Image 1 (cartoon, rainbow, N blue to C red):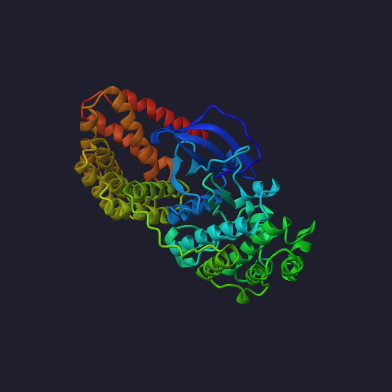
Image 2: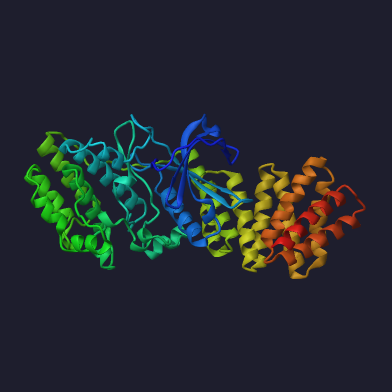
Length: 501
């Protein structure tokens, strides 16, 4: 995935895995071109937003919603693939890891806009091929997420790889029905720019989008018609210096008028584009399957090329499913840190289900542990203990002793908050006994993790500090000094952080 506003090399490694080669800035977003060290230096694109937007909850929610949509769509040859999501907890950075398309020539910009600027399009064959690719990508996306509407189809969001295939990108403005939004745990929060307030890009927005009426799949089909006519004519289908003028052009059917005035476009192709560009959405094609069928007929009649309806795609590879599950886990963690535990729970449950289906114990256990943390945030302590116990059982089964004992610490925290101090002490004693059996370096790392979990468990820093002091008290009763000095140092750092908050 590319865009071209600024290129400069930056010496940086993201998430201790992605070696940054270039950075591309545009609007509120940033894209890093990287090599993935964990995947034999596979070229990938890491999409995120600018640093000064990190603390803006609207941007974060919108970005997480886009990530959930993109990951749910999965793999298709006409969609830029989302591989995974990286959430870096200490800094709150979020990166969506995407397929990086290699440009055949030029500066690396693979967008259709770049090709149009270079005057590379205009032929009927190239236009029909691209429209069919986009149609198939959208048909697949809608099959994965019923009711999906992209809302921002435009040449900047269509990319062409070296293989010649067109791929759709940028699902940041996607609209989904409420039941699907609930499934994806996302919300269609709009940002502050005029583009986002309008719910699209002015030159490609349908009349109903301008009128603020119900949008439908026909709204995307209208944008497809605008793209097709622009490719054939070399000009924008509507013109105007001001938004009001552009809106009036769309609403009054200026696109249809310009189509009628284009002498070089064959009649059958004109008829197809006219059905896409109708001002009344009820008069347009009503679904992507119909659009695909019409484009196949045009391929046959205008290019003398036989083409079949696309067969279903199903990516069942274990690695892809596990990556998706880990990405949903990361999205849940981001929502949890944003104090949206109910949203987080839905993603943790989805991650757990994928882990169970793929028999991937680490994912199941991590999802269970995070569910416990989320239910703590909701003060549903019995449920929290239940999930922590399930996490412990799975971690033991997988031989992950350290994480098992971290969750004993979580259970002790819950008992402490319930006022059941004997059970809290009994459980914390297990944790302390474990810490006495590991190396000094491991002790530091282990208790750092324990402090982080305590903070996540508690509704405020004061209650977190109370439990951490209680932990120190229990440790001192054990008559060991292996923990005390290190733990006191970490508590000092934690209390300094409280002073800054």
